[in-house]
Image 1 (cartoon, helix red, strand yellow):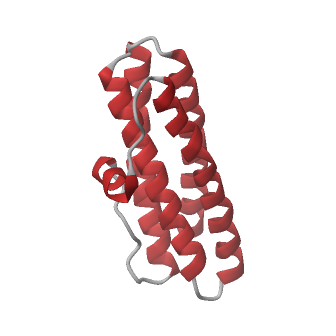
Image 2 (image 1 turned 90 degrees about the vertical axis):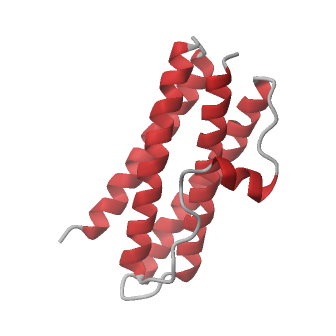
Image 3 (image 1 turned 45 degrees about the horizontal axis):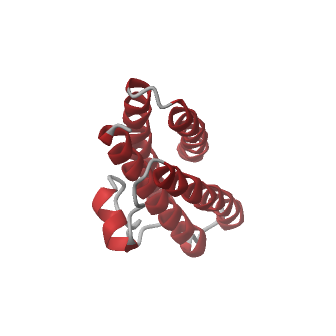
Length: 146
């Protein structure tokens, strides 16, 4: 299997994990007049992201590679920034948006690598993840519209 696919899949896994942690942090720490709605939305999103981590890691294993080991190893592959800062809800939403934009870019690169390698199972899995990230982007962007 292509080394490009394996490296791209590691980045997708790391970004998904980083976004899951950041989104859970937003779920825990959000305050303000829209607390209940944001708390619920962030909860749904981090649960989806955490559910995606295991299949991504298992796909790496199916390709004969080890998944990243530990938080430092994951962070080394991630292009999503760790943390949200200590801002208000709007700042958290913007940080999560930036994370999903980075994740979408990495996903598109990984889909292309899988397509080039004729790795249809990986490509199919990644297309599904791309759809989920785009949906989350839409929801988060909608929160900032005035």
